[in-house]
Amino acid sequence: MIFKTEPADFKKEIDVVGCFVNSGGKFILLHRQPNKVSGGEWGFPAGKIDKGETMSRAMQREIFEETGLQISEDNLKFLGSIFVRNEGHDFGFHMFSTTLPSQMEVVVNPSEHKASAWVSAAEALKMDFIYGLDDCIELFYQEE
Image 1 (tube, rainbow, N blue to C red):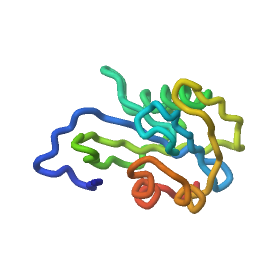
Image 2: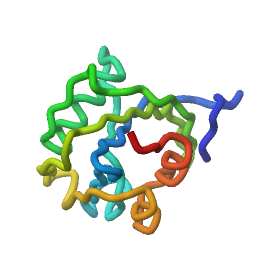
Image 3: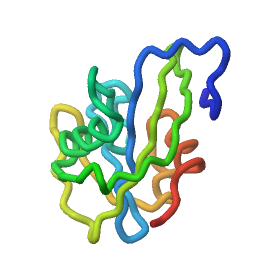
């Protein structure tokens, strides 16, 4: 379940960041390797915040690790946070967006992903995507 406000019984285990990397009305989705959590599903660049990292620094790092794209922290726009409960685990999810001047080539990290695609929100919702992606698109996505 996804909550806009923190439930009274919420026991946050980790904080995760995710980003809509936009260009020309589309954003990047990454296809997870089958052996990973949510294997075989599509999601946006995302990952855990490491100890001592700010949310924006973690997002910058995750975008680079997963796509090869270098995004300045100054170009990351914070969209908001939600509280996620999935399969008995609670975590904070903090969304960002950034806009690129063109749809740049994505170089996926083969240990985590097997492909990437630039897609519209409508196209993304037809794909086999990670838990909560539809809610994130509804709550946070807007063309920039």
